[in-house]
Image (tube, rainbow over the protein chains, first blue to last red):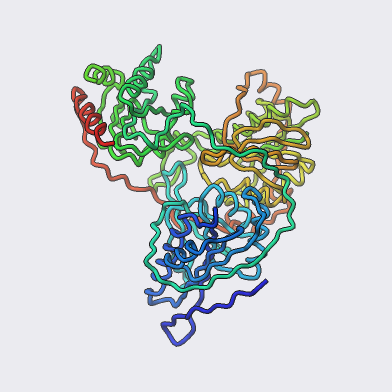
Length: 355
Length: 260
């Protein structure tokens, strides 16, 4: 294995040499290209690096390296990565690794890492990243903060930089900033959290290592296919969603059907809460919430939905929310632009008179 | 066939109570079996029932109250229940939880063929514990499993769903599967099942039984710690509409229909 020689200039604010903080961004490659989240993380790492430079009380220099495993990397992707602010790019070249051989990925990464350790490793919180990262951090016997939606650093008592990622927990109701006592400090970051900024002009190094893994995988892929388009509603395309909660329940539960038919007639989305699914009134295909789908329509009308957190987490990014509930203190009202304290069944009957 | 299902008792996410300081008031909240763990348990019971000599061990780490969850699992069809409980375990993060669970599996169910976990816990959402358990036991894992088509002592046929892609894998045991979707058959235990379950003693083990010292587990042993916790402020100017104004809804529907 070739050793990485650092070539970039060390910026110094005092006469002493600055402390180096090495960051690895683990990147997925598909068809020789980085995913956009790579650039998002690179841009964020760059801005943290700038923030550290501006702080008087510390003298730190960040060194940011993208590490990827795969057969090849396209030149444009490499160029874009430098533009988003990374110092180094390392490709751990492996021609025949398959995407589901996670223990092999972890093994290859570990072989590289043991000779090129870092202070921080950031992973994308993609499905792949979330499957790989815990394998790597477990091998390194270090902590891992999952699915973060913010990234910063704090200074500890000794004026040392500590990574401080923030993540939503408890159905996104509670936010927690979590620090690590062990090194490397690691986190998976949700794609789309940061903006990719290609305005940097960092000239960096590019290195390829050929690394093989002797690990034997017990997994054989028999078939892989895209799921057939079913009748399952696609909430991402609906600009209006009419959503039903248990406030629409009645003896014959006809109000759910009424709302569904109205949605069909208007060609808009129809959704329900988990309680409606649990009560066997509607199939889980229509469920919005933590364990169902998410939606961010222009208009979300909640008929008789109280606003359990797991439901809120699936619809809170809607632009305009109208909620109808008999309980004037229903939690859904906190997330609503318009609040109607009334029986959702009566309101629905009224709406049907007009439309 | 030896099946292990790891389960967790979680606070009911539909019934969150907060303290004045915006912390979760766990003492005021109901606890229940984590939804995805219930899926894992149902799949486990299904395949246990297909083989005469199959066993299904449920393992949970948690306070004494987690016994309720284990009783429920026994009533559903588990044949053995293990509770890992110790004050020292409290505050364990994902890697430490995985260390405790994997050491217990190694020690008490060493001949396991299949380990089933829920894809994630509803309270934590990390999805990290199953992967860490697999790594610590040095076995492969399949995450995001939506269906187990077949399973026996040697081989498992599973379907994994990632975004809208379905992957069908054939894997040889031992293997860990993290389950994301409910089993087609879910058995709701009846009184008689609970009575039968009472005949099975829940085995309890603590840190000492698992050869952990106090700096290895719990808050002390966990590499990550919460630096601060806060709730997002909601700043919506909610307008209350008097009830006879359902025209407002109609106006908004019509306005938004034109947009796309």
